[in-house]
Structure formats: structure tokens, C-alpha cells
Amino acid sequence: MTGVETTRTFALRDYDLEATFTCGQAFRWQWHDPYWVGVTGAHWVRVRREPGVLVAETAEPPADWEWLVHYLQLEVDLSEVVRAFPDDKPMRAAVTACRGLRLLRQDPWECLASFILSSTKQIVQIRQIIARLCERYGEPLAVAPGWPPMSTFPSPARLARVTETDLRSCRMGFRAPYLLATARMIASGQFDLDRLQALPLEAARAELMTLPGVGRKVADCVLLFAYGFQLAFPLDVWVMKALRQLYFPRRRVSPQRLHRFAATHFGPFAGYAQQYLFHYMRTRHGT
DNA sequence: GCCCAGGTGAAGC
DNA sequence: GCTTCACATGGG
Image 1 (cartoon, rainbow, N blue to C red):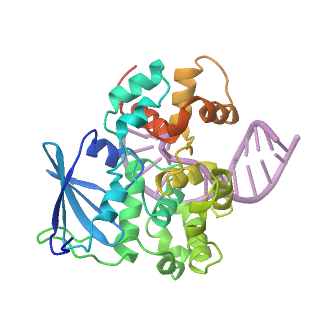
Image 2 (cartoon, rainbow, N blue to C red):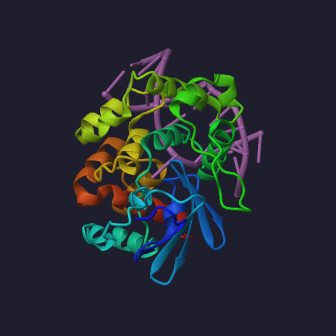
């Protein structure tokens, strides 16, 4: 309540920070043992685990901590989510492999821009592109003494003022015109990201897909990771491989059919199930 | 060198 | 409608 402390402790269980920060939903968290260091909105923050709790530290005393509680989704009861998964062999394996994996609740613009940049890129490269973008066009942030400089994620207005050549110099290749055009549509007010939260899933998805560089998959990522639509089910190459391998072995199944299967099979937290399958496929060795 | 990476949009049947 | 292709860049 005071707004004078830079450190705050939160009770915590069923929360794997590493899995959550490295599973391909957010791209700016960095591991500096024993801390995870990141930026959410205008806050630089580092977090570390102690028995049963999470210790969070900022560079400047925040007025409150609600932004962090919301971003990390600390109030979500993960056991309720996992209990709602279908009780089948693939999901049991994924839950065992990814225990404590959470979905974050990110800023819509950062999430949208990040996934426009994600197409046919490996996660490590997406991180590099975004780091360059933030370094060049973000606002420098206050960080704790002795820590490397960090910046905000650049606003739509800021990116609307750069050139395609500027963006290409961040090594984002053919994604540059998409990001630029989308930033300009949002900065100009032609497209309102705030309006989507109140829409039904399908309508919000259709709106997002009118943006350049945003197809079904990117739209579903934004709906799930930023707006919290629990039924959004991003179907990328990894999840497609997971579904085909685990649920439709030795059969030819179209993406459309996989979408229909996903919509009926995984229950009210299908988006979480998708993230478990994605992380499970990407981290399991052999088999 | 080759193939692939959390795809999308446009052009071709 | 569905299929094919180009699009930058870098890692394995």
C-alpha cells in the first residue's frame, strides 16, 4: 500500500518460471542466475524463487503491484486448469513433462508485434530481433544498479515514424513491411486494439486478421497470450506435429480438421493444453 | 550447400 | 475453394 518498496514477496505454487518464460509465449525474459529479468510495460523487474514464494524486485518503487500479479497470472489456480484437460495419454505425458507451465497475460501490442515477427523464425531468433527493436526504438528504463540497460517495447506511434529500411536493419527481413503497416494502422486510430477484449472470440480473431502480417495463427497467439481467450488454439508446425503424431498417427489430416478436433477435444482451457503440447514437443528428447 | 524455423499473402489452378 | 510459391535471415 505504501508505494515505497521495490521488493515484494508473493505466495506461489505450481509455477515453473523457466518453462513459462522460455516456452515461446514471451521473448524478452533473461536468466541471470538466480534471477529472471524482464520488462512488463514500463516496469523493469527481476524475480527469483524462494521456498513457497516469489520475490520480485523493481528498480523504482511502483505505486502498486497489480501489473505484476496480472502479467504473471498469479491468481490462477493451475490445478483447476490441469484437471480440465482431457484424461488421455498425450496430455498426461505433456502435463508430466511441463509441470508448472503457465500462460502469461501480455500487453496486446507487444504480443501482436512480437508474433508478426515470429513467422518462420526460431524462438532464439525472434528474441534477437525483438531485442534489437527495443534497444533502438524503445524508451530506456530505470534498472537496478549494476544491471545492463533495458528499454520498453516501442509503441505503435514510435514505430509508425520509422522507415521500412530502419526495421529491416533489425534483421526482421520480409516481416518489416507487415510490422510497419500494422503499427501505422494502430497509431493512426484506424485500428483499436482495446475494442477486441469485449468481442466474442471469432469476431476478435476476424478483426485481428484484417491487419497486415496477421493470419489465423498469429491472431490466435495474441488472443490467447494477451487477451486471455482460453479457447484460442494457435496451430503452428509444432502443435500440428503433436496432434498428428499423438492423436492421428499414420493418417493424413488437414489443418482445418485439426482445428475442429482442437475445438472439441481439449475443453475449456484448450489454449493451455496447446501450450503444454507445444512445450512438450519442443523439449522432449528422442522418441 | 541443404533444410527448417511458433506463417502470411498472392498467384496459380 | 485448395495448392504452390516467395519472402529474409540464421542455426544446425
